[in-house]
Image (cartoon, rainbow, N blue to C red; front, top):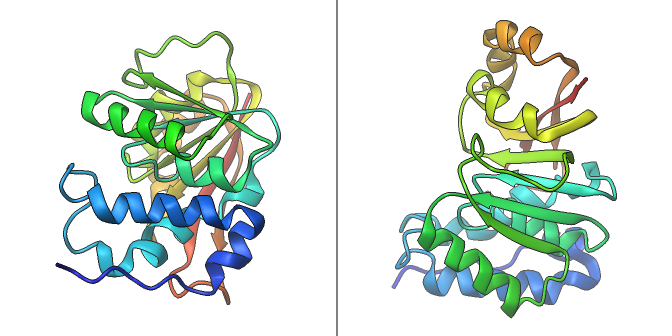
Length: 208
């Protein structure tokens, strides 16, 4: 049995009075994540640092409203952000049935009243209303993400996309898609410096 990472002190800083829900999610993911094909076997020793806290630092960028998480998978970042921000409503968009089952189970177990789960591919999803913000993590390159995410946003809505160290290059490579989807005010943010051992990078942009 692979050892699960001990909860870092930063977890309490980031989750505050929501820490117990975060701990329960971490336990559920460590107990079932590998077996259910949600995370790889090498991820348990860095479950908090690489995954949960990596997502949690994005929470302050969200605004009260409705946020869509495209390709939610294990619930990273969607479930983590829903725990950290009970004042925000989340729509988790995921095409795979077994992952949708997991997401629904976690919503029930963690008693997350601010989350709904939709089984669909991002390009096929039909929502009652356009979203205020859209998140995604480890889904695709920025130029490929834009056609999937930008159409889901209301006019003036915001992309908050988690990325790796190559984020600036991804923005440069997406010039055509940026024009096509009327994306502006693009910035690459580095989050978690001085708090986390691995920083989080986010491409934030507005869609007009």
